[in-house]
Length: 165
Length: 106
Image (cartoon, rainbow over all chains, first blue to last red; front, side, top):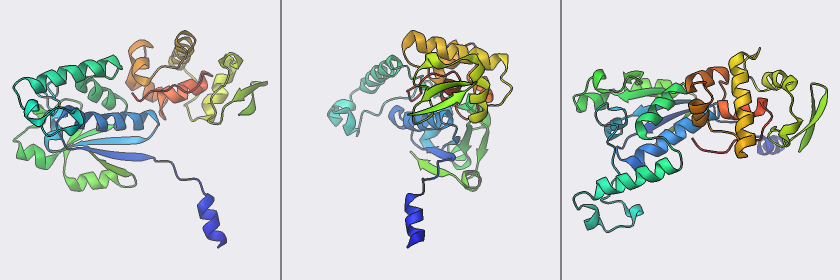
């Protein structure tokens, strides 16, 4: 009984390391992972970012400046799905979101990813996705540390928390 | 709230160890604070540049800057900031500079 009591009053151990996976390529699905990685480093927590599938657009030289808000099948936007599919709506919503993001002093995606790399966080691309999309290391921004397998990822994530977004 | 003696002077700290009144801080306290919070010592000119920036931002705006702001306007890059204050530049520099904890997600 005494042991149980002791455990109950023990302070939870602080998080020391996080491995964050970004797997989707829309603006609203890339930012949360970036914010969490940057926030982890700001708290002195080790952080690694893994980009897989369409999440790799965030580190793709030709695409990272053109990340769009998903306007179809996104109930959070509160516009009818048919309206979200009209030509130009995604671009318009993206412009609007980018404006809001800048207004609260959050960097755009290319700057944010660069800043996260500067904080000492590792940036990794998923080998399976690189092969699937026929990409080369040169297609990815220079801040990417490596292209790795899922096995490498688990090895790297050892001893920390894994966050999938 | 707790009180603590730094460089021979009693100062008030909140529960997280941040200064309650930044006017109680003196430069003589910075090294002691740095040692306590795992900031590499001896403090370099760059550290001091950041500490002075933290204080001037605080007295100007009423709150300490975020890491992004520090990287953009303190004259020390984000990369260097993390070398100077490895366990989190905004929080640690705020601690060493005797200002309250900066709030902000970025």
